[in-house]
Image 1 (tube, rainbow over the protein chains, first blue to last red):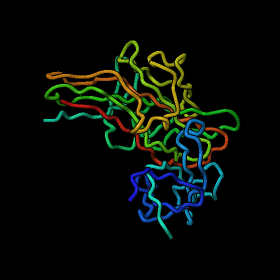
Image 2 (image 1 turned 90 degrees about the vertical axis):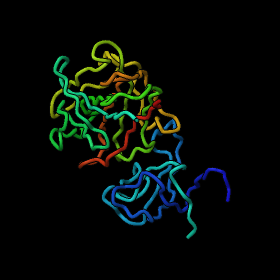
Image 3 (image 1 turned 45 degrees about the horizontal axis):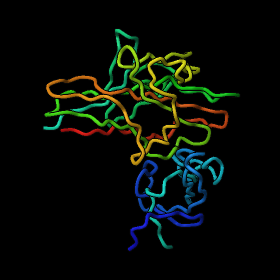
Image 4 (image 1 turned 90 degrees about the horizontal axis):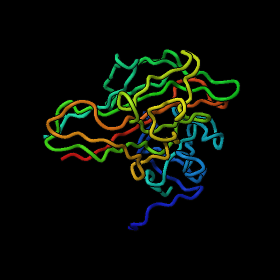
Length: 82
Length: 185
């Protein structure tokens, strides 16, 4: 197993290890939809898209559908193979 | 034995400050200086420009004394802004002048708070920054410490403010987690 930190790429499938939306099942899988520079977009580093709509989700500044988006960080993500 | 340390939200005027324990609690920002506003006085979505919450000031309190010293104070967010489109949060440490840098929040109740700037808040130690730039790996350092046998308020305040722009959507925002961290001997 690699010790290298995960570097997300658009299109990757991931699971959230930390900072999950309230009441969302922990095994929910997201697709990486947006990658930003943290300096220009503080707190909006990795935009994730959920396959389902969920009340606490948003649109990642309209990059994904309404109630499907969530911002995260690489260190809070685990890549999964589907 | 470790000290009992709580996070206190400060509201009210100098001389009659209310210090509410918000440790591990949900504490809402609003357009009032109420310590626990609930869903009253929400921040409106502006038709142009920006609406601001009232300033939210928080400071640590040692309710029991440490065996040695508490120092090396840090403050950080989870690093991800999930308030949604058009909503940001800015903050800074405050320790300048009276009341350990605390200043009562001002504005027009039910409409907007006064923008958090060093010009408007004379207790701030520096210009406010986007709070999501402060993470566990890159936290905001706060001054101050407390040593045995003292108890009570210690360290810098962290003051934050929610900013709502025209592109924000209606409704209650997702809660965000903000953390104080320190060393204790």
